[in-house]
Image 1 (cartoon, rainbow, N blue to C red):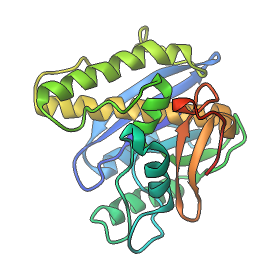
Image 2 (image 1 turned 135 degrees about the vertical axis):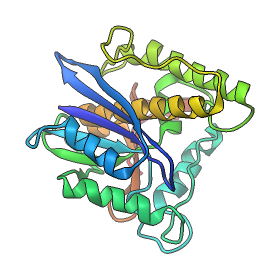
Image 3 (image 1 turned 120 degrees about the horizontal axis):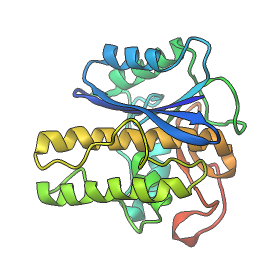
Image 4 (image 1 turned 60 degrees about the horizontal axis):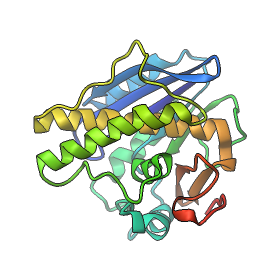
Amino acid sequence: MKFLGVDFGWTSGASGLCCLGWENGRLELLDLQRYAAIADVLAWVDGCLTPDESGVVAVDAPTLIPNATGMRLPDRLAHKHFGRYHAGCYPANLGSAFAARTVAFGLSLEERGFQHAPSMEPKQAGRFQIEAFPHPAIVHLFGLPQILKYKKGRLAERRTELARLRDYIFEYLPAHVPSLNLANTKVSVPEIPTRGTELKAVEDQLDSVICAYIAAHWWYWGLERNLVLGDRAEGYIVVPVPNGQLAGGTGGISAF
């Protein structure tokens, strides 16, 4: 079983890519890449799994956009339930500059057998794709009061926040179920650079690690410890709830 995280370049630019494998009851980092061309991203997906191998792909991009204008249902729900953590997502509609590109990527995954999975039986075999959104996942996985602000601001501030993300990944994910320990792996996770262009590359890769972990968490737990914001018809985002309790003490598991 493989879990692929794709931090997709919505309008242009490179996509961060992470492949996790399920071995002996734990997750293992198998590959961490970054490619600019969509053809190269799809070739990477093809290379990660054998033709008959099961897997879940989690994409940080709106691959289902049914609405001509305004906001999708999952976008509204993200703002409603995660806005207080500064984790509301960017609204998507068919008039958005990125819509054709992101929807086409989802369709390309479907052509490869990855069907959308807004619901899933735990540890189900097959090929599936879901939409992921790292910000609320990071809040839940690491028990934070708000998002880590590594995408905007001064370079020094972004670097500090991205370093925090890397530290949290190493510190917290080994203790979660499923467990991912990156301290002893054949594939190295890059250190935090000082230059802006290099920082963006590492940002994309770390986001892809989060996406791949979301895919694994969804496969392992299903609705028992994950939220689904939306549905197949209107678009959806899967958000892990690792301890079975919503951040901020609201409690409970819900599929909105």
